[in-house]
Amino acid sequence: MSNIGSYEERIENFDWSISEEELGYKEGDVINIGWYCSDRICAQGKGDRPALLWENSTGEEKSYTYDDLRVCSNGIGAFLRSLGLKEGDRICLFMDRIPELYIGLLGILKIGAIAQPLFSAFGDESLFVRLENAGTSAVITQRKHASKLHKILDRLPDLKHIIIVDYDETRPLKEKEVAFSMDARRQDQLEIFPTRAESPSLLHYTSGTTGMPKGVQHVHYSLISQYLTAKWVLDITEDDIYWCTADPGWVTGTSYGIIAPWALGVTQVVLDSGFSAENWYRFIQKYRVTVWYSAPTAIRSLMKAGEEIVKQFDLSCLRHLVSVGEPLNAEAVTWSEKVFGLPFLDSYWQTETGSIMITNFPGMKIKPGSMGKTFPGIVGTVVDPQTYEPLQEPGRIGLIAFRPGWPAMMRTYWKNEETYQGKFKNGWYMPGDRARIDPQGYFWFIGRDDDVINTAGHLVSPFEVESVLLEHPAVAESAVVSKPDEINMEVVKAFVTLKPGFAVSEELELEIMNFIRKKLSSLAMPQEIEYVDSLPKTRSGKIMRRLLHAKEWGEEIGDTSTLEND
Ligand code: PRX
Image (cartoon, rainbow, N blue to C red):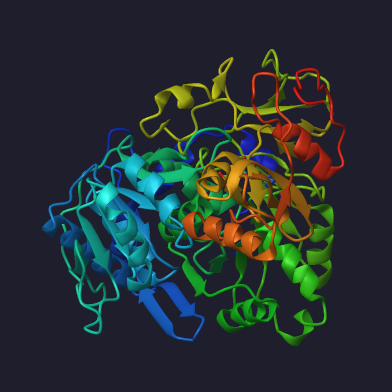
């Protein structure tokens, strides 16, 4: 079974009402993602179908049917209400990839509250800025992550509850903690809050070049895009076993790791464990995964593990592979075709777009290395960086631009409308990426238009890393840029000047790296620190990251006329 129609066929007379009709939604109706992902599937008589097959690093397994999703998310919703939480409140999910994370999101949405997923590897400072900005009322978490919250609790006056999902008597509850067991609190009935199309649903934080992370605010209507893109691009059918390898701390893990698959009624599998090629292949073989949505860093890591290991497993179940998050190099596409008999198809989108925008639509001729074409209903082009007018000549590099108005587009940046408005130029939404379009309309990614570092598919703000570096007692000044990396595409590199009295040493280096890892995350931790006597600055004193970046990437340095110390 497959949902694929030809690209041309899909584009002709495209209208998002196709998705609305399939979901039984009409303008003005109540639309609640939590209900769509559980109750609706049960109402279709499919409550007994497996919704989630889960396994962790110790081999523990759990499974949940659609009816389990329904009653467990009801239980979570009721419990949140019993704490006085209600529609519009921000409730953070801060957990490993355990079932409570996936089903908890539905429970939050069912009471009309706003779900704020945060990556469980975040350190206390990363957590603090995001919880403070959102004015978060409650965090649902595990015992092992709660300690990070206690470090910052006195700076978060809005945070009322820390909900511990794996409480046991061995450790008493601490300040603001309350225990909750999802499996024990199943509830058949819950009054679902009547959210409408424009009611806020999710708040995902993303990094920019300047300033603190921005809260990307989505609404329940996003479902209309997420459902149809998953159906046509990921080609999910009810008979599939679907595996999205992204963590729900990031947008791929929610849009296509929770919302779309469950709105489509598919069985999805989740592996809560670190990466190893062997373990991944074993997992695919064991659960007979058919549709696999992953990322270039993972594919490059599998390539590095080699072809021999692939042959030890029966992966004949796989039928459709899609990638997202960073440039998918042509070699990765041809390698996957060789070893799995299937190419990885690229897809391009971002936290702000909420759903897939550009893709190698199934059935379309694939050009390895290209991101493909715009999804039906998406008007996209590349524009001149000065005039924001579309570049007419094929092949010219410009800024990617989309006509606003697709259902899953963010509605604002939380408490930052000004920055949101700044994302629009000449009537286009500007995602901040550079690309070229070839004569056949295929997009080829060139790079970001800002200094944000994309390491292993995760965006890291140089500004955030620099700010935390400056908090270290030995650091006088810092500049953070990316440097090339074979597997992760880019990694973080820091240039540092030390304060008088501090000398370069191995211990200091480790200490600085760990300082960043603990406060921000392992992703943001510099893989290399270069100590310098001074940093290149403009005459007005701004550090010129551009120069340092160019040096790392062996690029032309360009105009240095504003440089102070040249
Ligand atoms: O720079 C683009 C890159 O990742 C950015 C979005 O990151 P984030 O908001 O974290 O969302 C990631 C998952 C949707 C984009 O602005 N990016 C995403 N997909 C691709 C990509 N770069 C190249 N090729 C892609 N397919």
